[in-house]
Length: 199
Image: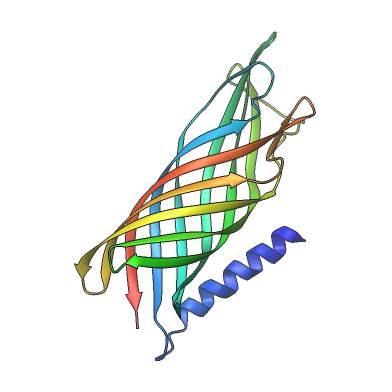
């Protein structure tokens, strides 16, 4: 139910951004991102996580003082533990639905944002020593989180901008469970992409 509500809210905001009003400015942003993951607390026999490349699509609506921002982020993940029977690796992904307020403090170059999100579990699988295992749960769980973002923009002309987005995402509840021990999943995200400004 929570995942459906978050997805519906994100879709409403994106569709609103696509319907241009003469009295309000809109922005559309697409990014490729490199995601540095951190899991806390670390599972028993933890051996490592793998940083992955994901992508983000955001729509923004000008509120006057600041912008309302929403959309989705796709973040693939993997965690490995070293068991007696070999390396156990769980691989999966999250579709993260943020809702944030952005303030441009040095227009048009720099802005900051903060807000909440909901992470929906995507595809998952388990493998032992490289061999996929069927019939076992991966331990991934949908959960709420918070985000903060610092963004730099460079005008390219034709209402286009090059965007560098530095973002930290903190999980607020159990994101993955190993041996009945829950862990939070946090990400430091570096994104690079293009923004389109619509009047």
